[in-house]
Image: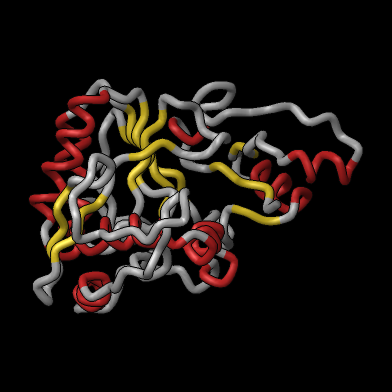
Length: 257
């Protein structure tokens, strides 16, 4: 595990965070047909066993998933529950995009909660599941966290081992955590805090100037509504296809939509 320029936490803080993650509770949720989901029963879609400290057993879905339409299909993602797993998140917790989706979709919340419980209580099992998934799928890219962050040294070390084991897969992440996987040729870290100490997102003119000031890259993705409001032609951009800055450079800034 390596550390960043971000200030290290007080001793014991990572342990407290892991304890909170271990005791997460699932929310009642319905499937796409309106039926209540029973997470205690194994199905074709949920067959990864996750055990909780209080003795419950749940079945989770695939440990790596594909993202939304913004991301190329070559990208697989691993997620934790946002905020609770994130060191140094005071500046962004209230506006966290990942947190909004967890509040809107209970199935999303539960999937990330199960990953978080397993990460906090049984890293060997989680590591084995991720290794098996990458071995089968052989993805070109793995994005570590579209929600969540490196919550402890042991968790970061787990990812160091996984990254080293798959040199032909490129891993990348966005982070504010003081805990990082070891540097590797196939691993890129996008710093979520800019050199000016502010989060790497914001209004267009602001982040454009900030990116230029530090030699960073401004993400070319824009939503249709953002373009329509400004009378600009919308041009689809898929991460990992038209643009791969996040896989290769540490300073990327994003327009807040």
